[in-house]
Length: 86
Image (cartoon, rainbow, N blue to C red; front, side, top):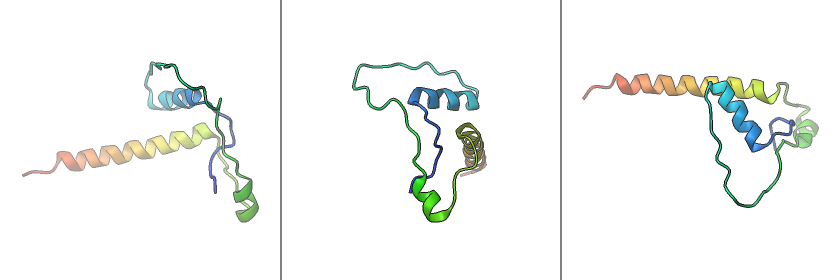
């Protein structure tokens, strides 16, 4: 089952959103190649039908919370690694 945002977003838009959340500036380098799909979104019909559930937050809000959680995990593991003595 897909669980995600039904918002249509391109890879460029996704990169911009995550970079903004992280407070980073990203220079994108587009290379020649196949174009592929213009964007992605999640088709949540099955999960809505089977579980009567649907995502309740916009993509950016979910990414903001996810980024904060990952950043906290990285910092916690870095502190553990820094405190190891041999």
